[in-house]
Length: 226
Ligand code: OAD
Image 1 (tube, rainbow, N blue to C red):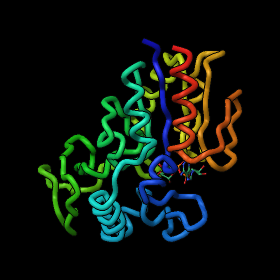
Image 2: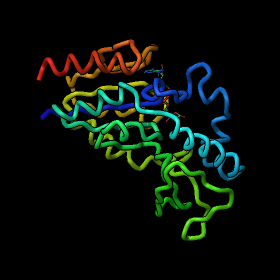
Image 3: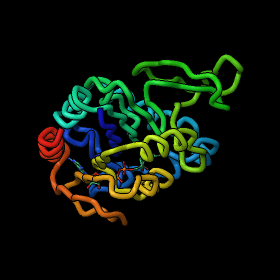
Image 4: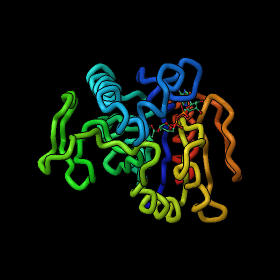
């Protein structure tokens, strides 16, 4: 089976009711990104950071995967699919995708300060002052600005081995994720689904639609060529 690498961002979950970051009314208009999503912000005001992620985690109980997530999961019938997502929600897994790399971490996990102990916490809040087993503060298992992105090496390998690449709902502004396309083999077809214009250097087929409609178009193109 051909291998597909699917790179997803916040726009993937927009139709599920989760706000994107950089669209108008996006999360970074409502919150100061460096206060709630950076390692410096965590040291300055851990309670504010916990509240931000506790709210995001609680929201998971109120949202469902959308048709776009379902289409991606369905591609596993005909292709070997790896999803490389910048999203910290669990909607790809809940739609049935079995191979998901979360570059920026996962809301349903917590960890100790050194990220060496990882705990499944579901959608429960992390309490102020809660400790990990090693005595360090229990924190969201999220990659904040100023932190390393350990899974980028694996993601680059997935992109370099892909026969087809699909990009959905990311403004491609945050590195290293935004650089992943450089690992694609020359000539590999790349589809980009986004209702807005996104700057990408490579030669891509742009489908200016929301995730659900755009992915239906991509799926039809791909399944016609199997
Ligand atoms: P952005 O908010 O930067 O970009 C969202 C993209 O989704 C934009 O290109 C929108 O046009 C597009 N979009 C909006 N609605 C859509 C829909 N219904 N269907 C498809 N696309 C839609 O989000 P990301 O690129 O994911 O990191 O942001 C990357 C990282 O920046 C995030 O992981 C987060 C953020 O700061 C951290 O917090 C560490």
